[in-house]
Length: 251
Figure (tube, rainbow, N blue to C red):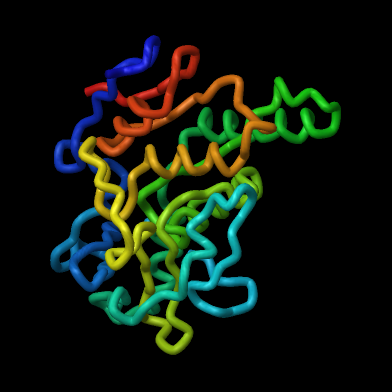
């Protein structure tokens, strides 16, 4: 059942979408070993998007505010590492950084993020919590790629570490290897979602856990959820309530 006032999510699948400006740099992550390819689709590619632990230890990144982030996950295991190689032999990290630096962000979206983050700063200063907005990224991408895009557009600090995604980092022993870990480890209890979420993350479960971590003393008056993928239907239908807003992509 869909909450009252929340529209159904109608999002085209990845294969139906026009890649547009993303065609020039095809960076995808997938396959049983998490193979990364750049410049074209890799073997066994499915879907995919760097940050490094402040103390230099891969996979042992501290949790951000409210525990929201892929950081803080257990150390990465060699079994989930994938070798990153470029056809022309150029440095992988530099190529990926360049590729994500070309991803466009609509100016209106950037202005919205900046304006919403200012309401939080002003609310904390003036004690007007009811007018403050908290920004949260809930994504099936990964920490590395999300941080790259946000830093490129000068928006990383606006989210204050509030990112829930799959943890990733570069292998300190091999600069051509990107280490990626599932948000929900394959060896741990699985979420069992049947509403379109992938095995490594149920967005509804993650959003519910985030709200519970905030506790009853920090409730939100309204949740505005922006989503354009199949796995966004789950949190919209399970978490949002009457009065909340879902901004979705139509066909």
